[in-house]
Amino acid sequence: MKHAFLLLLLALLSSCSPQSNKKETSVPNANTNRTTKNNFRVKQPKHNSVLLVNDSLTVKITPKSKSAAIDSVALYVNNRILGIYPSNEIKTPLKTQKLGENILRIKAFFSDGSSRSRSRKLKVFSDISPKKLKYRIVSKYPHPTKRFTQGLVYEEPYLYEGTGQRGESSLYKTDFKSGKVLNEVALPNNRFGEGIAVFGNKIVELTWESQEGYVYDKENLDYQSTFRYPFSEKGWGITFDGKDLIMSNGSASLLYMDTSSFENIRSVIVADQTELLDSLNELEYIKGAVFSNIWMRNTIAKIDPETGKVLAYLDLSDLASTEPEYDPYKRGYEYENVLNGIAYIPEKNHLLITGKRWSAIYEIEIWE
Ligand SMILES: [Ca+2]
Image (cartoon, rainbow, N blue to C red):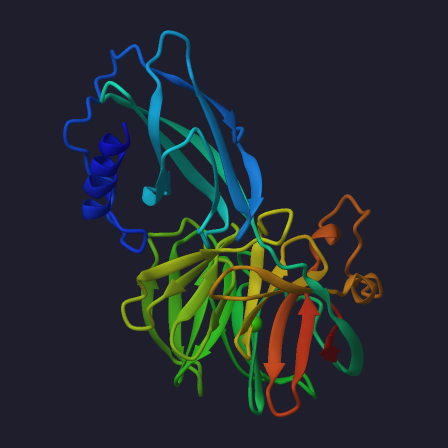
């Protein structure tokens, strides 16, 4: 039995390594015929078990009656081999950094040479306890309440704002202290504007459901081009990390986008210790972190853009409650007028924040 296990180990290790992205290849001489009488029960983990990254994974399986004994077990997470174990009870580091749904496959090898696999979905969350950020209001500037704010970007000395709603969607370049509009470009009436980002000498504005974004010259807002993003049904927020564009689409994913081809390069799923952070909205890249509004919440999440882990929360619900255009209890649309819009002033290390149809833009200082 020990000899058989070693042969199996060699066969598996020669075709798969933990670092490789290769999918599992078949094991020589292993009979994977589904008619085999051999089968097993998974006692642990249960379906949809919750684990934190860097947790240990415990797997306990037992052969069903009339089944041959189990020689060894191979575990795969998202089709990547985790290890091969000469036991029915395994405790091993999970070794996945992917937040959200992960697929565990348990492949049992029986003493007669046959094998059988079973799968379990695992929910993986962050192992970081998010900090609570504190803030103080430094200044307050006028903001027209007709603007359904969807994107906010500061680049000295201008503030750019993108707005939504069909027939009301525009891109503005403003002097935010006075509120004076220096340039404005309206989107077509059937387009619903979303997030904006400055990259190089360009500025981009996304649309909600049209799967297209518009590129303008950031100096004069002259239209340059239209691009499409077929990889995402919707566009919500967007920001620029100095290399790539990063967009949100109402899910818990941050989608990295190439600045030339506008293709999706990679995606990161965002979660804290207890949930996926759905409805990521307006974004701002600030000193290695992505700050994100969360739709229908007056809270901003500070996210590690590499891992997707929520590092901190900034609760601005007190500020939202002072806004006359925001009313969570009305049956009209006022409940929608939530915090949305984050810009960063690097010279002062301050944020500019506002909300949909808010009366003011607030300059705030934040700290841990
Ligand atoms: Ca922003």
